[in-house]
Picture 1 (cartoon, one colour):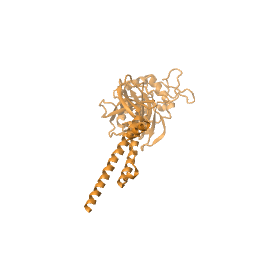
Picture 2 (cartoon, helix red, strand yellow; picture 1 turned 120 degrees about the vertical axis):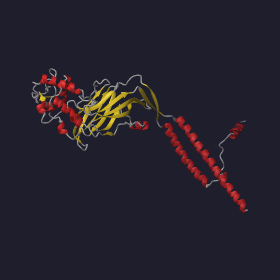
Picture 3 (cartoon, one colour; picture 1 turned 90 degrees about the horizontal axis):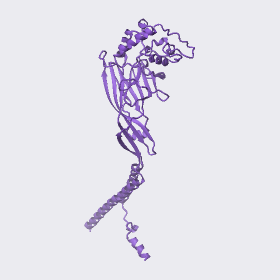
Picture 4 (tube, helix red, strand yellow; picture 1 turned 30 degrees about the vertical axis):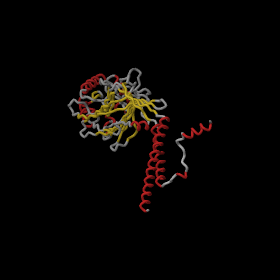
Length: 422
């Protein structure tokens, strides 16, 4: 009985070996065997890559709530604007100024450039705010300066003592407040809605470069800031505290403040000298993705390396950015939350008196309500082994059929040839 069971199992053997004495070895069979081995190795590698290499699934859905904040990193070069004439600011959709949330991790720097684009000296912190973007700001600027002049025309700006540990705020500070840097003095004046007088008379600003000293230079502005996710714009425009020099300056000043003629001259220079040709070296939102992820998702910052040039100086560049919250989840469960963006750009000519604004570069952004999620995953070993069996089995079967066909054809040819000769 036991032997009959063994014989039964042997009868269902579908992989019975063929004795070597019945095998016919040919050159074509050897070539097909080598090709089959190479093909099998390639197919196994393909299955490994397809099933065991991480890939991703993407989902798009409406975001239930806005992100907490929008971190922006930028690096922009202005080839024809001295750093002393350039200011940067951010506004919300209503036109009100936004905070840049300046701290240890968020700071804006400027670096002077010569005519060849080489850096000059060391980078310095950028004074934020105080941009001029509309022509109608002239009236309010005039009124503020006349008010400041009437209040401060008897103020002695040379009373600061360089040896004091607590620098003077020149009448703009609160009681006991110290202004030890030029930025501190400017900030104190702006808090009282006063306008900064001739900075050459402020001891804390003695080291600051004047616009005339930077003539023919450019400026590189780079930094990292945090903006509101409610939308708005980041812009680079003429500085409200544009410093004027020349033979008429001392004649036009009232108690250290510029009169209307100087303001008008400043606006004329804003058109004639403020050439907003620029290069966007870098503009990103949120955290940086690893290179592997960026390459696999084909994520690019569309404005990186973009250069724009104006020939008449009367230009305003406007970039409209649709910022899309993006989340990437790795296999180990960790996530990176960042942002992608798409961009549409527009160039506007702003001739003097057209009431279309002043020259500048504006980045208008809006955070999309749609949220994109990418989830890393692998198909697993079960898919891998299934694919290998199918690919290898198919390769050997097809190559075996080809080998038999070639052998039968060669045999038939020899048989027909032998019959003719006989």
